[in-house]
Amino acid sequence: MIPVLYDGWPLLHFPESPEALHLLAILALSPSEVQLLVAFPDSPPAWLPENAQPCIHHAPDTLWGRFFWEQFWLPRLTRKLGASLLHLTSPFPPLFSPVPVLLSPAGYTSNPLNTQASFTRQKLPFADRLRQSFARGGFTSLAAILWPTDLPTPVSTPRLIPLPPIVHPGFTSTSNATFPGLPETYILYHGPAEQSDLRRLLDAWSWASASIGATHPLLLLGLSEEARVGLEPLLAEYDLGDTVRPLPQLNPLQVPSVYRQCAALFHPAPISPWAGSLQHALACGLPIVAAENPLSDALVGPAGYLVKGGDPRALAAALITVVIEEHISTSLSALANKRTSGWSSLDFSLALLQVYRVIASRR
Image (tube, rainbow, N blue to C red; front, side, top):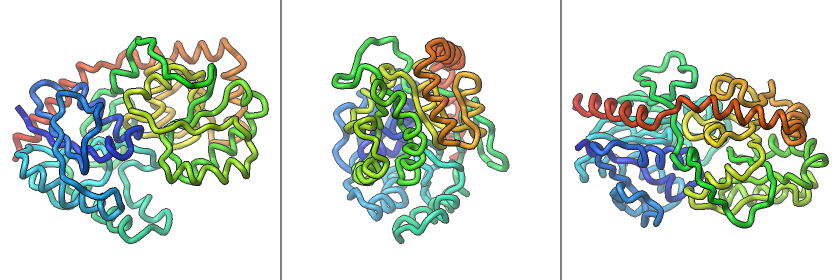
């Protein structure tokens, strides 16, 4: 058995995020030769997979709490629990670790392997700046960065290991389970929710809402409490009525049902290398309208309506077309299914086990 410690902070505090959904996928698909140890800063969620062993060390849900969690408590827990490896899905590795650290970068950023980009983007609280500064140092000592094979390889990135793309099995299930209380038809947004992200989204939706908003409202999934507070004045400013509706926080195992019930995914934002909304929409065979960039182009290709430059009017026109023109929606769905037909949970599981074996043997 190879004991591997995983960071369960996203599962507890951001359960609908790419970081959490990718960790759930790893836990669901991890081979039996791996002992799954999941560190939590508080009591674990009831929906944690039965094969995962929760390990609790209490830490406050604050910026300082997460900084000390990532930089001090996770490394100490690896030693206490006898873990051979530390596997992260958030790009904030510890500066020092007694065991090799692996990163599967998940999350929405224009440059998922460069914390300097987010560090200099805006004036941040001191605890956040310190957290990102330590993480930049931690990147230099990572044992491996696991990267999906369907995305272009970042240049000048040492220790990068390609793995087959996967999503949590719930997104590829043929289950007819539905999530109650949703509109009969709707557009789904499941992405970053900073003020700039929400403005970009509403800029585009404001051009589409008059045509399709009454029959296909825009539902926002995965918003934090802070994002919900920031959304309210924006909705008043844009005067979009009830055509935009934030969903309550969901159990992540319910998220696939929300995807399968929607008419299309709308994503005028950066993508996540692992477990982003584009990957989940492809796995569910959904029509996609998104902003074009090198990663989205490589991932989606002809299976989505990608708009260059993220122009709001062009994004709105693409979304209206997908909703109104049924033959285009059907064609995109078929191409999405074809795009993911080669995704194999077994291939991912075997490849991940091999990575674990090789890196654990270097200790």
